[in-house]
Length: 109
Image: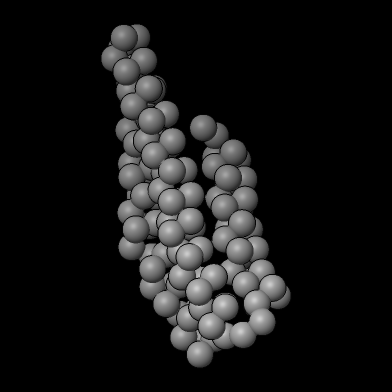
């Protein structure tokens, strides 16, 4: 995955998360509806980000396997970088999304 493609993917994910959070106040009638929507969207946001990270981990493993067959150190390095990036994205999904959702809920209250 090229750097430009990775930036596009992160931009799309950030836009999707922003759209979900901002649309909560548009379609909700009361604070209770907004809070319920945000609590329900936390699971979806975490899952989408974690699945994206898992896809990058999968690509990293594929590149590592290909590099073992071709004995290419550059491909091996790229595979390790993708593997680490995917794991980092999964960790971000599991660690950062819940506090961010909590901050949004506190702002609404």
